[in-house]
Length: 324
Image (cartoon, rainbow, N blue to C red; front, side):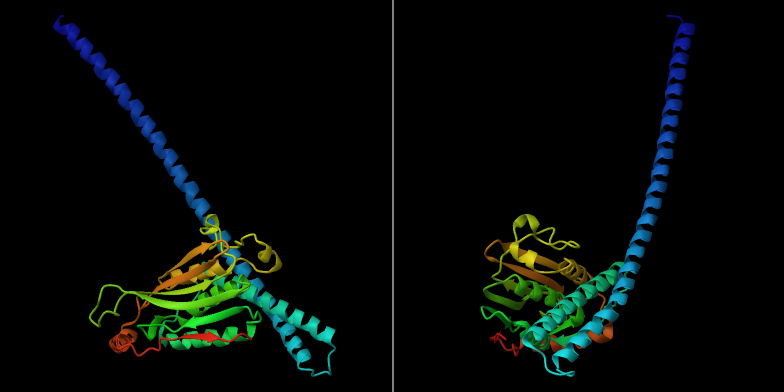
């Protein structure tokens, strides 16, 4: 083959390669334009989703506040009637007024759950950590639920916490999580017990001793109807209610457990569930012994807390709550 033919062949190959490069560049440009368009569409949809979430949160907050006034009026009126301010009541009248009172209290709980959920979603819920006694937390819960223990076949038992006397977190939010757990347990337990306990999960020892790090798990165990495994993941989602004969007789929004999960995450923790149908359930929340990012001044008493915890001065006997 002559040199001229070889040059012609090389020229043809170069032209073919150049054409392929141009085609590839065009394809890349087209792909880039598609990606940019996709990003723009995603940004638009994300903005619309944020607006929708904001509108939903505003709506829930507005409606919750609007509902609170008439609910409070109804509850006040029922209290006045049950106090016989306007005269005696017949047995039937007292029965109907108690029904109104119970329903209004349930409605108030639903409204509070909706308002709290709206605050969490809008990022407007405040966390106020402080040192508090676990014994005081359990005592408050014990006193809160004692009046509602109307089933003589169910016992509510609080096991006094071992190994630690104080915790640094938001006690009001923790109490709200445990109240939701206990309320559900009492609601779905026809016979047996509901047991509340707290157990330390040790972490890496810090400068103040073995309790300078680690976690604590609060558990509410019941002997109720239990939950099938296929519902375990869904139970903590918004508006989720598990179908059962008992559930059909009870009112609720399905927000309590969802709200508990979000509150636990705000406190740097997590929720858990172990359950078997016909045997019972154990709902738990695990929190750090100290809320992450706690102020230095608040953590300055950690040494005394750790030493008190290590000394084993916390009572260890379980306290049973007599049925109302």
